[in-house]
Figure 1 (cartoon, rainbow, N blue to C red):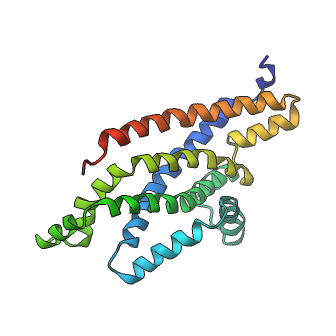
Figure 2 (figure 1 turned 180 degrees about the vertical axis):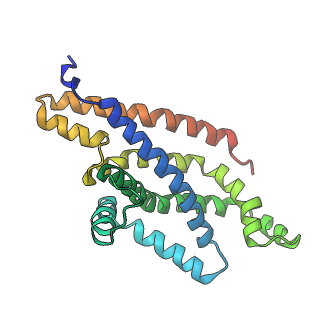
Figure 3 (figure 1 turned 60 degrees about the vertical axis):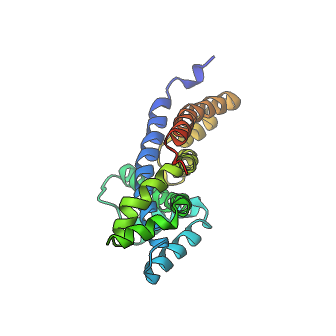
Length: 221
């Protein structure tokens, strides 16, 4: 029944999807947190940059961003991210594009969590001598993260599915292999079902786990 899978590295393709997801998720969390800090910063320039970045990037299709990392950064500006091999370069550029796009949504999720922290706590922190960065790092962000685990889980699930766009610049992840198999095999429905099941296996446990953590770690008001 699954003879059409012979000769194709399906597990390898999904492993590439997992690597894209994990590395992009870590980068997006870091950059998205910095953007959220900028958006609530008392410094107008930083606040303006964060707002402008989020509003622009969220309204640009991911495909355009991924293509820009390849055709723009690599081909025009010769940005290779230290990679001499074309496949490695494509992989790194895809991660860069996914981080640039996903971090805008991470930023908004974290900012919504920051808004749930009572203003009085920040005022109390300033009263005992903490500056803005200390207040954000020690008081606000720990509570904000606990309140947005659910929304961040949704962003992570969306990121996992968005990795399929990386096939547009030649990254051999699951969607790229599925396209190749559909072109070579006369089992379109079966191939689609296999890859759909693969993505369900990747995303469903993560969603359930993070949903449970979100309820377990929620800040009681």
